[in-house]
Length: 289
Ligand code: 7PM
Image 1 (tube, rainbow, N blue to C red):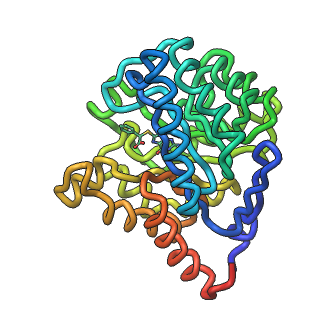
Image 2: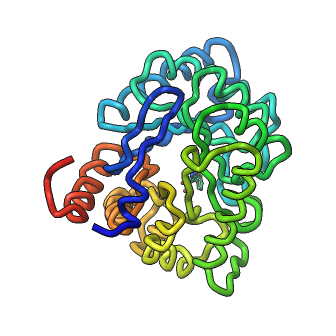
């Protein structure tokens, strides 16, 4: 076994819940949509629904539930702090008490980071890698791990004309700079997860290079998270619409784990977990773990 692989075999302390990274984990996606929380009655119905969906994903084997209140969809408009807090915090409060998994919050805002951790979140997943005002300090003061993701441009226009000289080098350099910024702010390396950000300001070719060369990120010595589930790259490869990308998503998850990813962010947890187990057993050449 390579030294690099040993170096990244560690564990993450997510608000007291230990995640053993010697084997890969699935992070289930839970979107909390804008219109679902419009009035009192709807609010409770949506909260119940979110709880049920989260419990189902945990029953399928998810180690993390990623709660997202801001759409980072290409072309999406930004949401206000108060709106994002209203969407996310009640869900985090309910889930962290009732669901047997780490609650991750997909946010870039300092106030949402602070309130989420207070409400029981065990991981901050930031597609903007803690570059928003106050986010770095908010994350440093919380004691939970952070996922730093690479994005070129902003969600509004990131898919218009993604350009790189060498995509791997540029994404690596960005992540190294953000890791350094985290360390300066007081976030130790043992609290950092990295993510190349599939689909965030990348052409199909860029995404495929990142997937095929994902093992180069192992040199950072930090756990790698990959999110490819249902993404447009898979639509471009297979010609299928978003609701028919399960098989392609599972294939991509397998490849990502084979190239070193330790956490796979996915909508379809049971299928994804089977796939990552196949990749893991192949890497280890054993059924142990
Ligand atoms: C539309 C397009 C809606 C893309 C939602 C998305 C990632 C993430 C997302 C990822 C990490 C999705 C994305 N993707 N966080 N949040 N890594 N760390 O497909 O790849 O869910 S949102």
